[in-house]
Length: 374
Image (cartoon, rainbow, N blue to C red; front, side, top):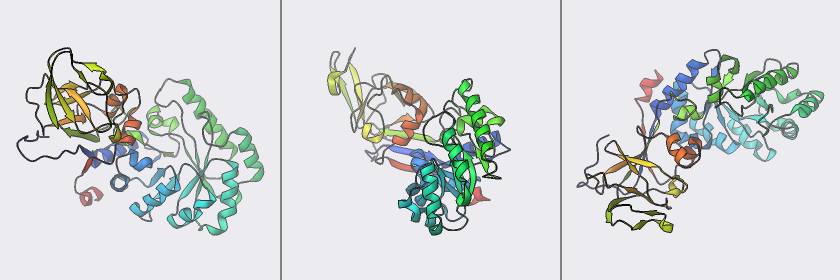
């Protein structure tokens, strides 16, 4: 992207660009890794912070037919975006208070407990025919799901009208391929799903998110659920970059050796320095805990100095003689991935993506969607 002309009018707003074609390519690449399974798409948390209203239709055009979100409100919003066709699964299950959302938006709950199962069965007269249900089987991550004692109780009660068509679990350590937990969970999932075979004949099985897809065929089962890999994050190292975040230099100021920058005077200039101020901070999803991070100007790094504040970053531009107000600086993009920036904050790429704030000017790039659909 060409540098901005500092003499031309320019905006104070940082700019977030999302490549919808890259998301579609990443979906197709992950689908190709699991050719024997259907490939769904996880678009919870507003498509990992990138905008469900634009991301979900791009994934549908790429071929996704099963979508996963966290809760019923997300699901209802997604139904308005996608229309009546695709299946929309709700990870957090079902509550009676939201049964109208499930009915009107045709949402499929992934039930996580006996209580949810009983509440769902009690609500069936108010729910439309054809509404499917999944069951989340606990295999070792110990969050939501039916454990062994609950599976025994579930079998005793019978699934009856629940119409379970999907059995699902979640890997705890899929981003560590050699971790023994992966095979233990895979075995537990296969065994515990077999216990439900009589009560849920023909139900499909789903274990793999992005990391599980990369573990290989024996983890794929019938339906995969890629999430972070669609958006350019690890563990899918071959993913196409999706996000570019740039901010204009607001001001460049000269400070003397020994002067400090930012709250707490946590950084002191070791030499006479030129400090650039950028209009983005922790209110925009750039963690206050960033340490040793860099931004990029003219393809060369410039270190972050001082603490991240609510609305501003300060960077050392001493070695960038062309730095001037209005020049655009790369925070995320070809030179720095979400995972690299996350490492500087002691966190993960998921958190960086889902925290990207509402103040950015958002742009979406995509080839003609009618051509893509064809």
